[in-house]
Length: 509
Picture 1 (spheres, rainbow, N blue to C red):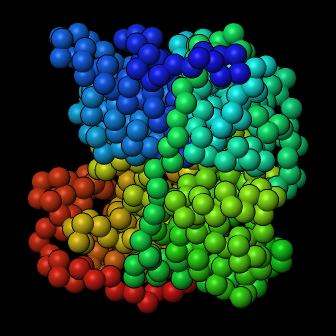
Picture 2 (cartoon, helix red, strand yellow):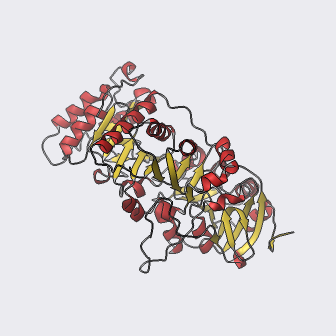
Picture 3 (spheres, one colour):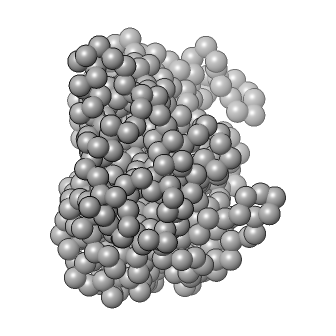
């Protein structure tokens, strides 16, 4: 059986071709566009070989995090030895933090160039989801572009999962270009989020395609709860800040494109922006587009969006399919090398809004590691945007684990975004605008406006007792809260936590 001249294989036949130790690059940027048939087949093969006492693990590369069919399935079968550049799987996270899986955390915009220049070694196989592939090697990708165009170019062997569930007209949104390698790389000629500079398809050498696997499966459904009190308070502070910046002329009257991360806080912020009459209709230039953004598009508040992936609920996916003419004229799907490109972010003047695990009193942000040791997901694209944004905003609740953890600390034990890349910090307590402030001024503002009241006295006392220097730190005490947490399970073990159970709101700008 053939598909446009390529042999049609079942997933188990493909898995049998992939040897122990191979480097396999899978499509997927979040659950969107994740390979769905081949990874479970590889997991089945791994379990069978392990039962026979034989080794079987792969080096796994993707665009970003993936759906349950990939990271979760392979991790539960102990089929991963090495992983890059980002993940959000609890099963895989556990194996990374126990040292059973080697993990390379990377800025997502760096992945394609690293692949093309061989930083990871040979890409033995690429497994890429598409809506169609032609005999001459045009590959029409599905709900994400990610690094798939580069994987198709670099891999020695290619398997295409042709997924019938997705509309073939998703390619109407695609704008795919692979920049030339340095030193011959041209500047990205992108003057508007909806400007198209590439093709609606990726390219592959037909000789490398060893088989087609036919599927008919949706992406994992992505649904978020309605904003809770904390998320709503953070959103209110961010929206008020943006409206004030607009009124003061620090944001142009036509506004600036927004980048927003994934999750309840990001959804609450977008909803708040959409509901604020002082903020004009706006554009997005981001790496993921969620269902909440599509709702704003239908309302006319979101004029258009450039993204790398459509991270949608099943209902939103149905809306896109049924209204493809409307959405395809307002949405552009790009490779992550372009969606996260630092030059484009700087050129377009992006307002970047990302979440943090913790922030220290001088404005350094930890996005990735608990107590500087155990990884959560990875840095993802936050650094691509934050370092180059017109305004870089980081958001998080002021406490976690029922108040046992303060997200505002004297010093972050791991830093992903340093003070030079962080303009604004927001918690449900309030917002700290750090622009133009020296270190001690930043510290006072962050403590007063962002820290939970139960932690403010400790943080002010730390700052006051440390002594005088440009960035006043007591290296014998700067990780006292983290040490308390590791030792006792709470950052302030001697404090009553009753006041921390419900966030105390009300601090403004």
